[in-house]
Every structure is written in C-alpha cells, then in structure tokens.
Length: 76
Image 1 (cartoon, helix red, strand yellow):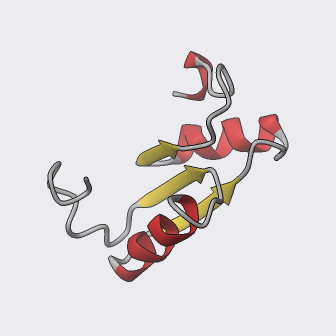
Image 2 (cartoon, one colour):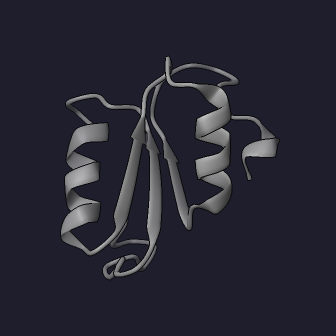
C-alpha cells in the first residue's frame, strides 16, 4: 500500500502506527524504519492523550486496531 500511494522513501518522515499486531503493526513498523522513517507505535490501550499529541505531529498515521472510534477527528 505504501508503494501504491508513492511512499517509497520515508526519510525524515514521522509515522504513527496504532496497532501492534504481528500481522500489520509490527511488520509495517519495520518497513517504515527500513525506509528511513521515525516510527511511533501504539496499541488500543495506550494513553489517548499521548497518541493524540503524537498523531498531530506525524506525517503519516496508520490505524489497524479493529477498535471502532478509537481515532477521532481531533487526532488530525
């Protein structure tokens, strides 16, 4: 998906990944770091205020928790 949307080079970008599953979260974190990004990883139980502040400063936000309404418009 990163390639499809033109995100091959993430050098200097900050990526917030919300979801730390073995299927999506962990591999995506590794891929983003390999492409030069600074990655912040959260799960559904992480402090929402910290998540929100980090997302507001991120260039890319990926959410893959399966938890409805975890991320609200004020995260952007």
